[in-house]
Image (cartoon, rainbow, N blue to C red; front, side):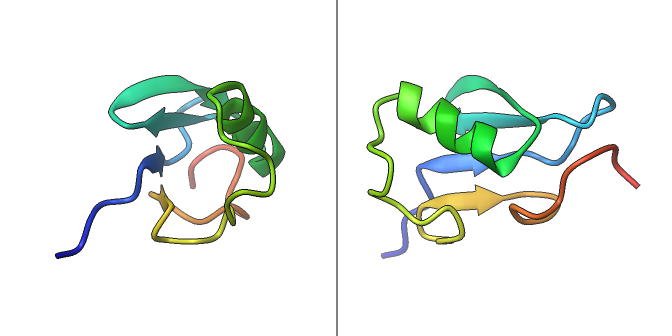
Length: 72
């Protein structure tokens, strides 16, 4: 049985930020991949305990960790 990733990073909004959700709870808005990592660290995930590009851990909607800025 496949499980959904714990973390979802949504497509960029009108301001270029991407909402970050974990276990159904919105954790914050990120404008860079580093900010996603900071948000996850504040939420209790240890730095280095995950790969930001691992699709089993993080679902990137609207582009991966290299996609930032205003939507096209």
